[in-house]
Image (cartoon, rainbow, N blue to C red; front, top):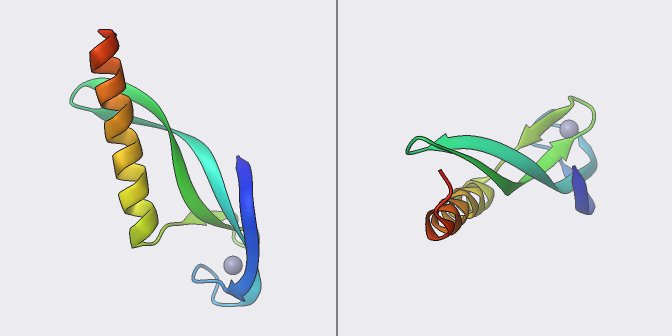
Length: 78
Ligand SMILES: [Zn+2]
């Protein structure tokens, strides 16, 4: 898990105000039968030890996965 930034705000995970980390993690997912490893972004609540994603992150993570799928197809990796 790589820390990108952190900001003190109302955490939507535990509903308390604290430093919420914005992080990048290696994610694994299967898309159209291919196992993909790609970078995904989340907010992380260290109080609940949980990842949270808003719409922007869901979109970013989806495109990140699709990019990796296209990259593998170009390289011809099965
Ligand atoms: Zn929290």
